Each structure stands twice: as structure tokens, then as C-alpha cells.
Image (cartoon, rainbow, N blue to C red; front, side):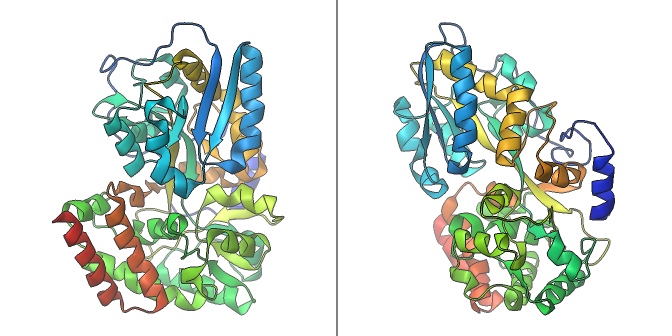
Length: 433
């Protein structure tokens, strides 16, 4: 399916009253997925008993704190005798410290996890009270719950549906003469050329922020992958970063050098976000999850998503990348499990999930949600486009993932792609030895 003209898409959205959900066949979760968790495969959380006590809710999205505070206050009114305390840690710290803090329920009666390595780590540690067979599963779109399952058991429920695809200032694109997304690599480079000619930084990239530098890799590699799980193959040794498909990706990173902001390889996420929010960058190389933050910094322009199509026209399998993350789980060691599970159910009700989505600018995986947030409506066509589940989260070994992502940073700094690949492969081989 070719990318829709933005103006046509927005006219179509304006003329419909249908709920904007990800249930359509061609978008996130539309392809083959993991089998559903088997009922009875493991005992679930304690759902019986008094819903009372203080629930610690551990997560990493400080920007969501106010919206979640309103929701949890409503939860406490519904369940007198309960209270919810948000335990918020920056995302980079949450990656490294969550297990230590959640183990034994010192924090996080209800907690979140990143898809991939962290989720696997928490499952292995036994901190999840399995949700298989609990009524809350019926609230979610089946095709989007697989990142929270393992071995036929549903341990957690991905709450957010985000697009790890560059965010676009469509006013800037219009001024550069582009009203439709590029269909091939030459077209993408032409878009960047035209943005540069109009005085914009074409592509703002936080190369110095490890948590966000790799987001661009998702779309840079999506159509170069020899198979959808090729990043997992790098970890097992089935593929190497010196293979032609990954070298092609590194060469394309080298072609992006003239279009990035100065010192891009050392830029942090806050600096690139400000550059974009101030209207000085055409594209922000992170994703839809930064839309609300851009608005908070004063961005007033309309937005869309524009992915680099790294192949020739007509050969691309995917138009963008999505992720089902912010995996909600109940702590197996919690002393207030009934209240923690009740909070999970409360957040999973379509009305409350819609309030979270509209307030934070995040699409959700809960079924039957209707959005009123203008940005969520503007990006809603992506819910039915050909998108790939974000491949960078296939890595379960974060050292190997860092080696792969660091190769792209090295190339942007000026390292020859072959040299960067060989250096990364040496690190991977040592890790696997």
C-alpha cells in the first residue's frame, strides 16, 4: 500500500466518526503473531480479596505523571481505602535498576517494562504474577499482546502503541515542496536536500543519547533486513554486521551526514527535541512518543511520520515501524496484589485508556478506544499501514545491541562503514565467546 497523501488522509479522518483503533488488518499486529497465552498455563495474581492499601506504580514516563495522577485519583475514589504512589525513574536508569527495585516488591506493585531485554530479564527473575486466564486480557487487542507473553504465558500487557518512525513537521515539508512521503532512498535524500535548501536542519538525530540514537536504526534497517528477525540472528550468530545488508545500512548512514545537525553524534535527546519543537528541523529521528513533549515545548505545526525508505521504489516491504511497549505487570511479591490487579483493570477500561492516550499523546493497545487528541487522529492512518515491530528490541543482550547501534554512531562521526562493522563484529564475537 502506497503512503497516503497527508491532506487526503486528514480529510478522510475529519469525515468519519469511527473509533480509531489498531484492529485493522494491515497495521500493527496485522501480520503473523505469537500464539495467544494458554488459559491455565500458570496461576495468575491474587484477584480475590479486599482492594485496599497503597499501590506503588513504577514506570519511567515522568511526562505522563500528571495524567496518571488524575486517573489514579479516580481509581482511589472508586475504591475507598486505596492510594496509588507513582515511583518514576528516568528511562535509562529504569533499564538498569528496575529489577533490583521491583524484586521483593520494594517498589512496583504494578510496574512497567520495556519490550525485549528488560521484559525477558524480569520474567526470568520471577517478578511477574502471570495474567493468563484473567479477565483483563479481554480488554486488549489480541495481536498486540505478544510482547508481554513468553512460553504460552501472559506475564504483562503492553499498554502503549508507538511508532518508532521519524516525526515530521509537515509545514516544513510543504515549504520544501513535499506533500507525500518519499517512496525510495533517492526520494528520501531529495527530501533532505530540499529541507536543507529552505534553511531547515533536515534530520535532527540524538546520536549522543544511547536510549534514542538507535530509534532511527529501526526504520533504516526495516527494508534492508534479509528476514524480519535478522537482529535476533546477529545475537545468535546466524547473521553478522559485516553482511552486505547491514553494510548497506551503514553506507546509507554515511549519506545522512550532511543532513544532520552539527555534532549530531554527541547530541542529546533534549537538544534535538528543542530543535524540532522550535520549527528549525524538518524531521526528528525518534518517533511518535515525542509528540506530546514537542507540544509542551511550544510546537504548533502539524505532524506526521516519514520513514526513510532505503530501497528502490516498489521494493519496500514496510512503510514504518511500531512498538508495543510499556508492558504493565503485577508484582508476584506484592502484599496488595488485589489492589494492583484492580488498578491494572481500571487502566485497561477503554474510557480510562482513552483518557491516558489523549492526555499523553500515546496510542494504546486497549481495544475499542476512541481518540480525541488531534495528534493521535493525525497519526491514526499509521494504525493500518504496513509496519514492522521495532527490530532493535529483538536484542536480548544489551551489550550486543550497543555494539550494533554504536557502529551507526561511528559512521556518522566519519568512520568507514566497513571498519565500523568489523569493530562491532569483534565486540559481538567476544560477547558470544
